[in-house]
Length: 120
Image (spheres, helix red, strand yellow):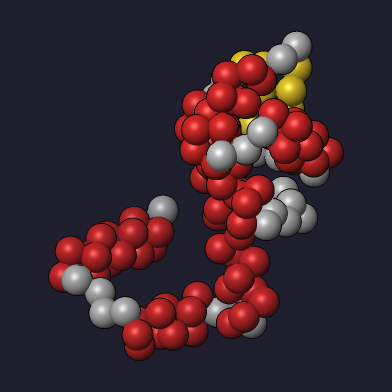
């Protein structure tokens, strides 16, 4: 799962699939035409590439994901923290909060998460 690398355009395409799945390939062409201004061959080319990467599958004209949106973005987040912050979540949070202040609600939500992980 962590070895699935997507460019920005492929991520936008995957987001469409995650939003509408299961989706017929013909309907996916229409969605991509509307949302991405793509022609049919572009849609099928990107679909084929993401199927080859193991992110999506197209069985009998029905497109679904093999990796959920949540799994994909969790893996991507872990990879960023590992590569950019030597695996240190506190270092990532320190870097993030140095430029983006947390609201009281966000801080409380994070504290609840920490407390639930300590208990569990």
